[in-house]
View 1 (cartoon, rainbow, N blue to C red):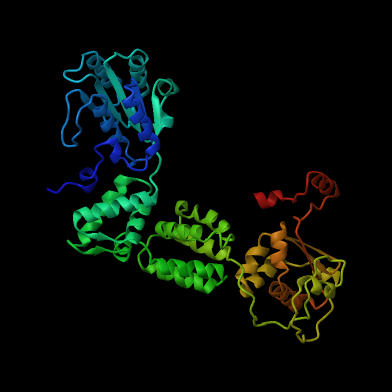
View 2 (view 1 turned 120 degrees about the vertical axis):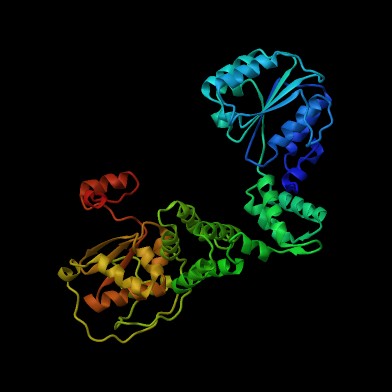
Length: 472
């Protein structure tokens, strides 16, 4: 039976420990000075070297050579996950009183110490308070927060960091070389990324994937992606590009292609988050998408949630001529309702196309007062999903034949005042209410209808009236 790679290449000395220099340096200095603590606590994520360092430290304390295949009568390892009762710790206390057989210290390595019961911790505490001179405890845990404060105050605690992907990748390539095959750098980085900062998981994954190649062959990124159920990186990028372009059809098409490749929604989300994070400096608008993607795997229907997340918050599409499905009026965006529409053309600084509308009725305030916001934004959705997603979060008001849209932020106001978006809004309004509807975009939230509430909101820096019926 072949030996697992993570055991075969386990560290044997402090010099072999990678990625934990802050711990190795202080332990080495303490050992050089002959300063041995009666209790150590090694905490941190799994697979970062806690157990290996515990074994190395136990042997260094006793000045014994360390061979991972051998054991020593004075170095006792205990798995707290299966020996977590008070009787187990009482038995340990009784045996700890016996002096070591051949070594200077009797060392107890307690792995996953956070699994001990409350009564077991209390029993252990008595030994930690007054430890025999010949006893050293080395405890390891992935969850130090579960340990009682009384225990933490009586140990030297060392926190292990997740290993950086670059360190893991270099180590994986070195192992592959020793095993007689080549590992592409990009392939090593992919395995390291999937290993989540742990050597054990990463090396275990390499052990499994090494069966794909023979001696002298090369393990590629493509082969690893296929075997780990990952989507093609170019397809993920195409999906993200479609989102950035505001291309709803492209998003749905690329997402379908990714899903048909057999990639799970959770992995798609992980790959999208990685790609978005790498492009965040160039595209800061991806921040909102990343925040929403984090919640997708926990949804009852993650596949549907991913689709709605990608299509509900599309990045604004580049301006391009759009077909006019309704007779449209001459449109010039207007920031304030009291000003004529034509004055806003200077602020937009873009020439506006002129359309020749069919004669329409003149809007009356009574007709616009019956304006249906839901019907309006549903019509917008047929023209632009990006504009629909903006308007869906806005408030509105209709006064004296004008439509006031409250964006809530300066960013939303600026997006709504885009020439293309204003053209769509005016075109839809024109089809139902005539050509004289003035459109005003405000960056504030819709103020309360009640004058007293409006005054209070103004004092508090603005606000928005909420209907109890809406909440219910």
